[in-house]
Amino acid sequence: MSAVVDDELWSAIGDPIRRTMIDLLLADGPGTATSLSRRLPVTRQAVSKHLAVLDRVGLIHAEPAGRERHYQVDEAQLARAVAQLSTVGATWDARLRRIKRIAETIERHRTNTQGG
Amino acid sequence: MEQGTIERDIHVNASPEVVFEVVSQPEHMREWWPDDARFESVAGAPGELVWRDADTGETKTVALAVVEVDPPKRFSFRWCFTEPDRSGQALFVTFDLVPSGAGTLIRMTETGFRELGWEVAALEEQYRDHENGWDHYMPRLGEYVARLVATP
Image 1 (cartoon, rainbow over the protein chains, first blue to last red):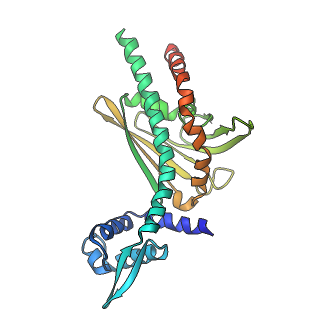
Image 2 (image 1 turned 30 degrees about the horizontal axis):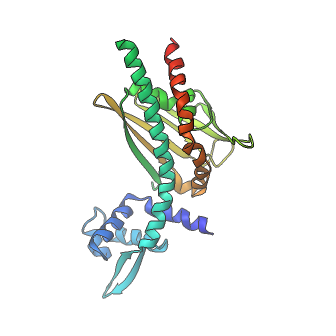
Image 3 (image 1 turned 180 degrees about the horizontal axis):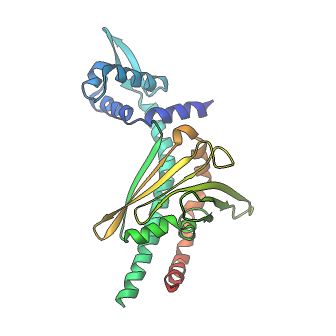
């Protein structure tokens, strides 16, 4: 079921450390657990666990490189995740714009009434 | 704790007191979100959001529960419960209001997507048309605000 995959996908990118890892891999190109752990406030072991989560949902792919594995971002899968997140986010953008318009209309009306 | 989270900031040229009223009072909420909102703006109060299909007249009701009411700083609630008695998993929405210049910064966060999965995204999609139709309702707003400030 694609719904299950989507849930895991959301969960995978819901974690700030994992989002930072994706950012680093996008900015610097393929990396290893060791290279990523040098740039993050977590241990190499923790980085390996996060990489496994990202790998499982297809957000990154690994290739053997000597004793380590080189990870790189699957941009198609990332684009898919971002599109889904945007759908929900966009509805809040619309609501917040309405909140802004209503509050500012009330504020202007009150100011005019007081000032008039 | 790992949760899918949406965060949004928006600056509003109105005082935190005015913004707080708009985000936390059901008579305002129904102007920016559902067709009807029924709840007491009191911590722990149960409530409902109602959407009406303009063509069929059918309604869809979603349970809500107020969590925190701290004027003019914070209003939060849960909605989209997995159980009909407002238990189980839910989405958790928080509005934090921060004075900013002569106005207010609204920081909205919605968490809980990881637990709920993507059903919510599908639900939201259904309401797109309603939201896109907002411009249709805007002309009524002037009248609405006039009534509002005329009330002592």
